[in-house]
Image (cartoon, rainbow, N blue to C red; front, side, top):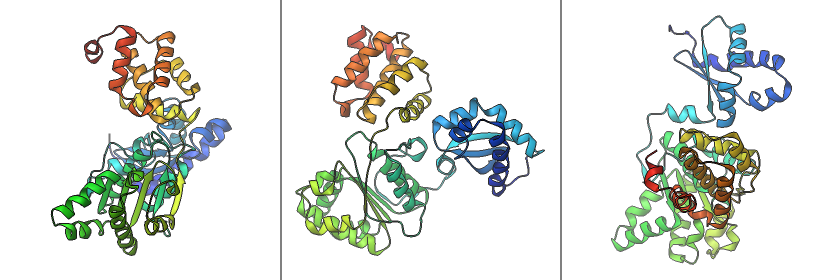
Length: 367
């Protein structure tokens, strides 16, 4: 197919013209749900790339509404162009070949904004963090993100670190235990000066499971000095913890510096918001689930993301084995409510399913 000859700079204007027609042609609820928050961002190989708020909305646009959208596009341009919808933030990540190598710790690339599901419970935390990597003037630091285990804090922290890596920032990313170990090893090996020089030159420092620093006064004092150095160089600090800072044993000097920033809390998705997460898991694992199973999960009051994820994985295993029935699925839900959600995983689901339904793990894995 010959090139359309259009540049990415023309994508926003062209898409706004298409939206103008679609707003007239579609009913108001459909337009508001699927199209109102979309944005034209680029042209690539005769494709108009459009960002949408979530994977679920992208799925609806790329399938259910595709023909209607193409008709509207044909009405505003004579160019032969295809349209492709992507989750917000994914286009930049997938098209950035340069990532910083100046990382202390490890950024999990699979935990990115491409597969981070935005919900009412995490929207404020996500917005505050995006202000940092989008380099919005007046972005606040430090940022304290609190929430119970399994609510998605770690995913968000690594997603923001991935955005910073794409921008080629020097990054430090640790759990509190990893930071403590790295610090203590530098003292033991007489390399404290090297540790301090590297750590204090970070443009972004991320520490997860901050509550594990409670009572470790020596490490807290070192972190306090690191926070001072990064702040003075206009860098950013993001902390993840299980609850408010006041509930942990922290030296006052560190506590006051962290509280000088901004605190926000993450809550789990509820009801319809869980649909995006379920479809993201289904898409990532390249499989499918019957609608009744998806609807049953949405109506179940899961306490956190990990329990929901565990249930999705279990349902997928049963579906692949062709034994997913309402009664088996109900047994899976009961098992997940009884299990520790923080230990929920595909491995634990295999164990539960093999014991409950008389299947062998080899048979399931062979599918």
